[in-house]
Structures are given as C-alpha cells and as structure tokens.
Image (cartoon, rainbow, N blue to C red):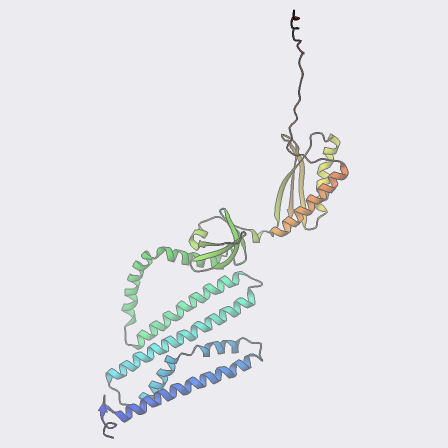
Length: 361
C-alpha cells in the first residue's frame, strides 16, 4: 500500500489511478451513449421524410474518440490537484480536441445542408449545384478561420500582431501562388456570373462538350466523342465560350442544287415547294428560300429556316424530315437533284484523205 500512497506531481498514485479509471470509464460510457443514440435516430429516420434527423445522425456519427477522451480526462482531473504545467498541458489538449471536433461537426453539417439544397433546386436551376458548392467552400474557410482564432485566443496568444504578420506574409504567399489564386477567383466569377452551369453544352475554341463539374481550379467537360476535357478556370474566362444550351432557337442555312436542264417554270416553283416542306414540320419557322446562283454543275438554291428547339437532336430530326419531304416532292414534280457532272462537247473538223499508195509493180 505504500506504493499507492506515494506522491507524484502533487497527487498520490491512488489518486492518479482513480482519475485515470474515471477518465477511461467516462469516455467509454460516452462512446456507448453516442452509439445507442445514433442507432435510435436511424430507426426514427426511416419513419420520417424530413432531413433534419438525417443531418443529426451524420453529425453524431462524426463524434471523435479524441474528444470523448478529453471529456473523460477533464472529469477525472477534477479529483486531482494539478500544477501549472499539468493544467497547461490539459488545456492545450482540450483546445485541440474541441477544435477538431467542432470542425468535424461543422464540416458534416455544411456538407449535409449543401447536398440538401442542391437536391432540391438542381432540377430547376442547374447553376444551384455550382453556387452551393462554392458557398460550402467559403463556409468551411470561415469555420476553420474562426476556430483557429478562437483556439489561439484560448491559449493566450495575442491575435492582433499575428493577423498583422499574416497580412504581410499573405502578400508574399499570394505572389507565389498567383496562378492558383487566379483559378480560384475565376471559379468564384463563374459561380456568380454563370456564363455556363453543369449540364450546359459549350464550345471553347475547337473543343466542345457537356459541363460535368466546376471546381475551384478546373472545370471538367465531357466531349461529344466521350473523353473528358479539363480546363483551368482562368483559361476558360479568357476564352470565347459558345453556350448552346441557352439558345432559344437554332438558325439553319442550307443549300441544294438542281440540274441545268430544269425548266424555268419549274425553277420558279421550287422556293414554294421548299417553304411548304419546311412549314409542314412542327417546331420550325420558315425564313427564306431563293434561287441564288449558277454553280459549276447545278443551279443553287439557298434556304434559311429556324428550329424552335435548341438541342442538337431536335435539329437533326427536323432536318431529316424536311430532306425526306423534299425528296418526295421533287420526285412528284420530276425535278432532279444535281451532282458534280461535266459535259464534253466534241466538234469534228474537216476530214483529211490519205494519198493512195502507188501500186506495186
């Protein structure tokens, strides 16, 4: 029993053992309590349609063992007489554990709320996903900034001079990572200005595809041939972007040719035939059709019309229907489509007569 009564750091060994047992016991009990609470909440989640209980389960499931150990250690330390060094060590441990735990809870809460809002609005407004993701990033930065400042203040560190020093150092860091910061601010510009959103079909230079993801540094686009294109956000904002999804209607200019043997009266009827074939299709608006020029091997008609649906598939369906209708009408009228041909006219001159050979002797 003499060992138990030995004094170590102003407390007997018995007191240290009791405090340690209390700390471990409280941490284990808290762990079991959190596990039971999560299990009960998950049973409730299946019976409700709200998202609040889902978020509560996600938050509780991120409870860290380090935080529970700190609570147990703090409760056990109430039975001890701690010196300045031990108190400072416990305080540093507590600030670190609380900082990490609040950060974990905050991150999962922000992620859950962002997912909830995106799920509600992305069908009506695809830009919501991009905006919410950027908002979540900014909220996480603000959360970590506040937690770090609060932790430093609790440890007795003067924040004012530190912020001034960080301001000077931040300039040097900004110069070193200006490309990354440029992409970051470009990402915020895309989120706020919305030149395109997830799901838009865009063309950048000679490359085109559907926007899949808008990140902090890059934007990923799935091309029409299947591969993924990755653009830096700053490069995108400095490029000319064509956004085909925001077209209200698609203007189509096409040309067709008929043979030179087509009579003049039939040529005069062709614009009307083209107009009837276009207006027969739903979702179109006829603009004009004219006999434009004399081609090398055809008489050329130029046609302009509008497809009132902007997507590519609708345009091709309408174009195919119009082409089939024109083929049928031209067959009925006996009009021949032209194709590259060349006619050779051979002119015979005066024939020449070969002098007779002298007869053999």
